[in-house]
Length: 177
Image (cartoon, rainbow, N blue to C red; front, side, top):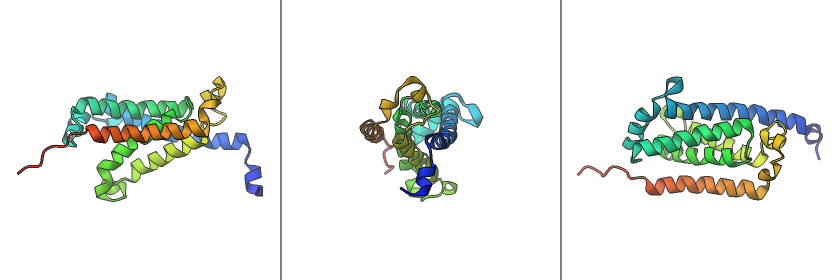
């Protein structure tokens, strides 16, 4: 083992995970609250529902509610470090759907590409595999068993399957003739 790896103790790693969880979790919870409640300059459910309808997610209010709840709930679970990979898997699910909307625009967020949802998805995957660390409710409540490799992989597969299910029930507008 390298000197670098030996110098990283559980406290140091847990502090890094706490910072990552706070930034990612608060960011995505805030994003969800824009959809759900109109906070932080968001459009709320009415405005978001109209946008989702225009993308073929009908009924728009249902899909907007699901997206907002997925973002908000995943963010809160990630911030708290609660339920192991469940919050990160929810984040992955919502971000896969978001990437489907932006892939035609390339990579960068400036062009409405996949950059931001890809970064959130990658953070979700990383947090799912690392676990929430020592400074988490999972640690305080003795729920470390939720961060086993099997549970982590299953949670991420379920998250990806949720996104696939969303694609399957989406009803895009019929092409004009």
